[in-house]
Length: 216
Ligand SMILES: *[C@@H]1O[C@H](CO)[C@@H](O)[C@H](O)[C@H]1NC(C)=O
Image (cartoon, rainbow, N blue to C red; front, side):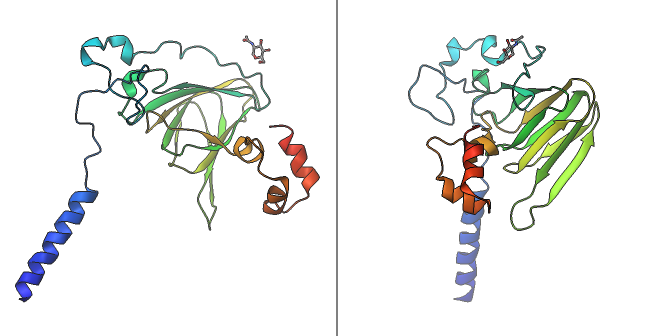
C-alpha cells in the first residue's frame, strides 16, 4: 500500500512539473502578425508563410534623432511588433531613446518585459524601485557603453545628466512590452481617478491633485 501511495505521489509530482515546465518557445519558425485579421493570438494571427517576405522582419530609421521638444525632454522610438510584424510571438523588441539636456524618460513600467539598456551617447542617471514593502531604489550613473537592466514590471526612469544630447538603445523581452507611464496613468486617466481618491492616496489636498491632473 505504501509503495502505491509513493507511486501516486510521484505521478502527481511529475504531472505538476509537466504543467509548469511548458516550453515557452514558439512551435514554428515564425508567426508574422497579420494586421488584417480580427482574431488576436499572442498579439496577432500568423500570416500565410508563403506571403511572408524579408520586409516582415525589417525596419529602418533607428538612426533618426527623436524629437525631444516636449515637457519631459525625451523621445522613445519603439521598434516592436507594431513596426516589425515578424516579431510576433518571439518575445523581443527594441527602442531608441533620445534625451535633451536634463531631459527625462519619466517613471514608467513595462508590464510584460524586462529591459536591458545601453548608452550610445551622453551620461544618464538611471534607476528602478522594487515592489512593496521595501521600495528600494537601485540607481546608477551610466556613461557611453554602459549597460543597465530594469527587471520586468518595476518602475524605472532615466535622466540625461550630461551637457549635450544623450541616446540609448533598449532591448525588451517582449514583442509587445507595453508601457505604463506613472504620471499619465495616475493623473491622466480617462476618465479621471476621483480627485479625493488621489488626495488621500498622496496625503495631500484636492487642489494640488487637480492642478497636476490638469497637466495630463
Ligand atoms: C518637434 O516637436 C515640436 C512639438 O511638437 C514641433 O513644434 C517641432 O516642429 C518638431 N520638430 C521637428 C524637427 O519635427
